[in-house]
Amino acid sequence: MMHDHDTIVAPATAAGGALAVIRLSGTDALAVCDRIFKGRTPLAEAKGYTVHYGRIMEGERTIDDVLASVFRAPHSYTGENSVEISCHGSSYIVSEILRLTQAAGARMAEPGEFTVRAYLAGKLDLAQAEAVADLIASSSQAAHALASNQMRGGYSASLETLREKLLYLASLLELELDFSEEDVEFADRQALRETLEQIGRSIDGLRRSFALGNAIKEGFAVAIAGAPNAGKSTLLNRLLNDDRALVSDIAGTTRDVIEEQTNIDGVVFRFLDTAGIRATDDRLEEMGIRRTLKSIRRAQLIIHLVSADTIGPDGSIPQPGFTLNPEQKLLTVVNKIDTRPTLALPDGVIGISAREGTGIDTLYHALRECVDTQALLDGDPVVSHSRHLQALSQASEALQQALSAFDSLPTDLLAEEIRAVTSALGSITGRGTITSDEILINIFSKFCIGK
Ligand code: GDP
Image (cartoon, rainbow, N blue to C red; front, side, top):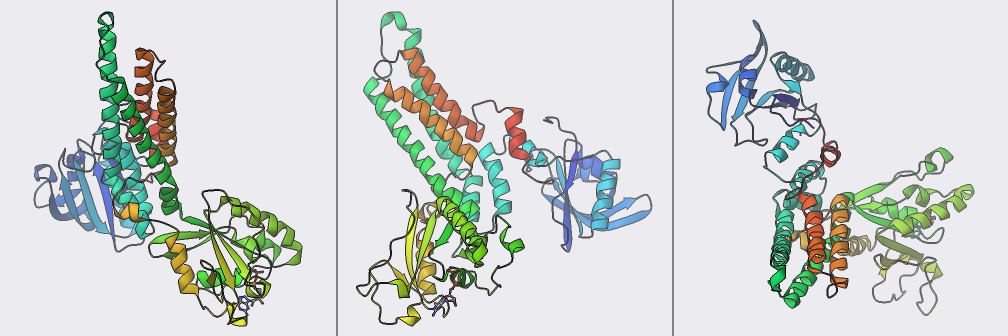
């Protein structure tokens, strides 16, 4: 990866707006800009955090009237000298300015290169850098809160606390090794064990938070299951608030991953295999059932939809034809209550008429209640990257190793296990460990140009 401070340039805004921003960063960014920017004074003489009106010129030809914002190292996103040129949002103007800045000595940035530089300058850690990408991609209030907590470093701070505790313990143990002839114990074994157990609980808490973090980021996965004619596709249309035609042609239903989503009170719900739900054609029924079972396995929440006319006179609800794993939630919903208005339903069962819209608000509410976002609102650390989950699992494994053989493990091996936990935790933020170029490229290649 590129570790020098040559001047990079990239558009920072998407095409199509009234204005566009072009970002430059590098030791010579101001001088490079001055070769094409004509204002009252050269940018190279300007103070940081100032904005300058001027023109982008190619010889005598004016390309555009622009504003140039100047940032001076180290007080910029990248920690380097930087300029942000705000110009008119024409793709022609943007490409001309990019061409001219390159002729003046800048080069086009790689995807994520601005953020790589910010990371290398110690402006943010890896978890925060990943959050920048999440923040830009966030499409719901909850996803925004998640990314913004992480970007502000809340999660990094709690990892750092754990890591520091462990480092302290490891260093006490290593001190013992230095004095091994004298048979001293700096680290009280009982206290050490308790601390490790406590750290283990914190790590497990973080691992558990992934279910929420992932659901918030990717959308909460919902499957609608029920017998044919229960009203699944009517309900889906109702929940998605539209009246799209049922998919009945083969071409449409063979599209494998048709997923539709709706935002309920700041959380995105993703309806799995809506093609399967909408496949009403007989020829497709078997295929549909197989796919429904598959989506039931993937779902975090299953709506078991039962038609009111299949309910016994004693109010007994037919059993679902599937089993759940312990992490999955089930909502039992009785549809077509318009046909049996006097039907008494057991507690916790929601009665609706998908066709008429009765009970849909209650169902929305129940769906939203299935996702407990309190942790997010409280600003608790919530894990949302599988890379982090993996590192936490590694940490947890090393910790279990240390604890399970705690009494028999010689001091040096114990210290080694603790170091392993430390480095697994450190890999999340990239602090205290050396992050390989491979990992950096993997993280930053997901960024687009200009971030
Ligand atoms: P699916 O096979 O589970 O997808 O069921 P559909 O959504 O295709 O619905 C089956 C039939 O039940 C259709 O004729 C719908 O119009 C009807 N239906 C769906 N919801 C309701 C409802 O709330 N009340 C009544 N009376 N009929 C409904």
